[in-house]
Image (cartoon, rainbow, N blue to C red; front, side, top):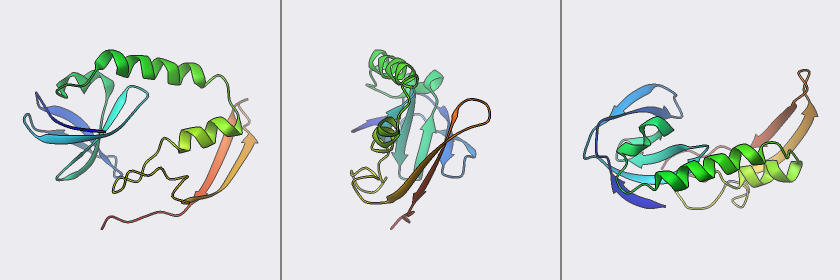
Length: 132
């Protein structure tokens, strides 16, 4: 998406470990994706998720656009369908190459069932890739 830098120290979550981290002001980041108001960035140290409330630390990020996209995602959640799931999966990109996981052929099965709480349960079978 775009190369930029951080204006302030920012709390983040390490992907895929889920552990908390702090990215330093001035550090170069590459924006990998924005989803639900959150931003996934790649640094020389790996992938990190920056929550919306800290996204103002990313230089040049259009926060209004980020909020509009988050609102559109929330509205789209009401219209559940198998196609909506496939479309959401197409928004997930392999971090090393700019191709989504569906077009890469990593997703090979999708099963949707009704959940006991009135929602849906989606099971996705896919091949995982490794860095390098």
